[in-house]
Image 1: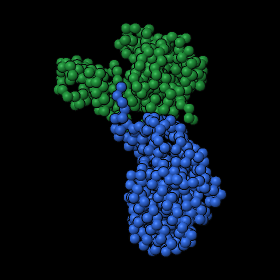
Image 2: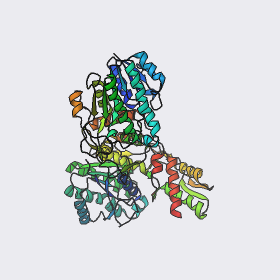
Image 3: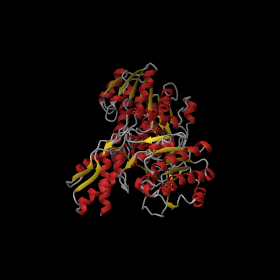
Image 4: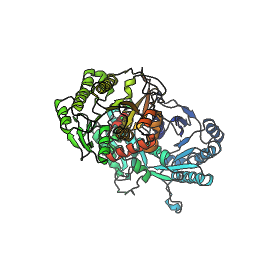
Length: 300
Length: 319
């Protein structure tokens, strides 16, 4: 009981990884962060080990040496445009490294509980015409791999499918990109115009810190083999981002869009397990404030 | 049967009132409502809003002439006692004395007193018995010990029957996140409102945590037994802070975030009270495991609803 749970987090230096390391560290877990590059994140942050997850022998050695009780698999290539440029890399990083990781855990730490973080951008495997990009292919196959190892080898594997995660930190998501441009207007005197493709497109945004708390719920409460959506349940128009930034920024700026085409988003709601155990989410306005503050700080 | 419970609107007192009423006993409450909550009061009990230090309190006791008097009203905040020793002494010593005199005059059949393990001070024994030397380390411990001495002398000089119950660390629904042993209620406060807790040392320090309903059961048993005895009410089990946090994570799903800070000078590492005497003399046994007690307390807080303000998120360091 008094022994700390050993939690290995892949993608530890990524946008979600940094928040996850901090949360689980403060929640009393023994956190081992894993990242491709050797990095130092600063004080009050658990150590980061370097390992390329496509390097099978190094990965096996890592699992053998650390024998984690739990693994949070966040690592991946998460940029849709990059997946068009190098689809094989997306498959290698998102699909195959998940297989390598699960296989290493099967051989070296079979009791370990694994949370594989997939994506909501899945295509329908019964209808190949629903496939939009190589990224979606890699993330759909990743979930299939995770489900297969769970079924074939009876491993303890849970799958999370978060929507668009936002929050302070190095994110390449639309909220961070727009907030960065506003911070540049405020601090660097950049042109006071915010350009955006489609103001009436909709997305579901979930604060990364809520997602991380959701991951802990899944570790503690979810049965093996289950797949869980994590969303705010409230799709927002992209123009809500720009107007939120206009409200909180110290500068006045114009918003220009190339098109304004209504695109209705199907509302996906979080799995009942998440809804039952997490009643309060960080308000969208609070997320946007924290994102803008982070972008301001990173400029100076 | 007729009883008076002082502090009947408080954390432990209100649970005791509920249990007495369940047994068909006529219950009167004396409570100043300074820390007691009106919402905790059983509607079948009769409330007298008076201060235990006042003349009115004596009059209530003389008028009612109860068969037994449970004296739970107190200043129970250790920190406050250190800051305001006179205030603490006025309530815990003079207030008790005022009540004792009135009970003696009203020929009350039994005086049952809520005391505390704080009377022992910073003893570092593995398992404390009632025979242990008492060296209070706070004015709260001292005022409770002094009240105990008055109670014993009232028996020697006036034959006023009594039972003194020394409680271990009590937790449960309705406990406020301050006062004695309130560490568990602080944890529940964080579960509802967010924010960090500070853990002094490594979190392996242990306490004897007892669920409020077991305390109530011991109080009921003291109506019929334990005359002229001082008895510890405890589980005789050690539970570490880390174990409680870990149980709460299991129940709630999400951990309370914690910061481990340097151990405080003079803090006791382990504290555990032997309950053999209570088992023998009161024919009582604690029935709640720490897990069951925490689950019931969690259900109580869950039903209060979530109260998450921005604290959790403000506390978060930015990446």
